[in-house]
Amino acid sequence: MSFAGVFAALCVGYAPAAVDSVTERLTYTIEWRLIHAGNMVVDSGPTSDVLKLESAGMVSALYKVDDTYRVQFDSSFCAASSVMNSNEGSRHRETAINFDRNRNRAFLTEKDLIKNTIVSKTDVQIPNCAHEVITALKQLRRTKVDVGQSVQIPVTDGRKSAAVKVEAQERERVITPAGAFNTVRYEVNLLNGVVYSRSGRVFIWLTDDERRLPVQFRLRMNFPLGTVTLELEKEEHP
Image 1 (cartoon, rainbow, N blue to C red):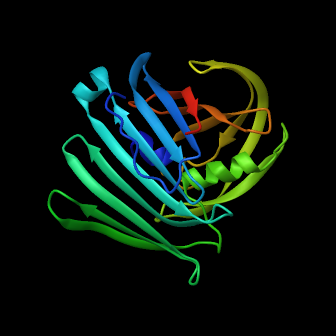
Image 2: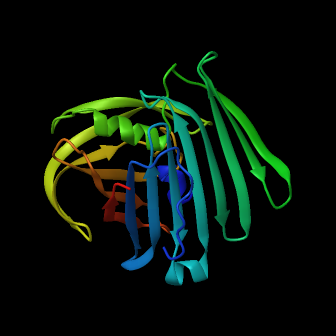
């Protein structure tokens, strides 16, 4: 599971992918083992988001990552479809999910674009309004959860579906390249077999104001990945 797989779940040369109408662009710098590992850019629009993730520097030399993820959704952030185009190392794959609300099922097809073959096809039962990781984050930004409280958000990756518990743990002052922010730290229980099988913990820091801006993400994973931190570098409203 890649960084983007965690967020979607989870640099130099970024070119914005087409979104219906970009209302917010968030750029994050990625740190891994105290080195700059890459950048992630999220373009958000009224009914679609596009996430672009690229590795950089020494990480690219070891294992180049160039992933683009698009999700379509409705006004309630219920997911309609998603497509991940993943270039990682020597692999080039496309993973598409169709969220069928009439049948309450999500249908996934993963293709090997180098061999032009289907790697896997799965489907899973989902609630009528289900989220993947980006729309789940949008739903969290919309939902007021006080410190010490939690909320459950229905999330699927097309292989597994679960009501994911999100806990508001603590207020913290966070400093990123974009500035200093008063935030609330949330723990998102996506891993350890809930949706994704990999062991670890996922934390998100949202600003403690009406914007609920995600200014920092942290993945604490087991060896060999370790801890990966994404910090907000730039916020734009084109």
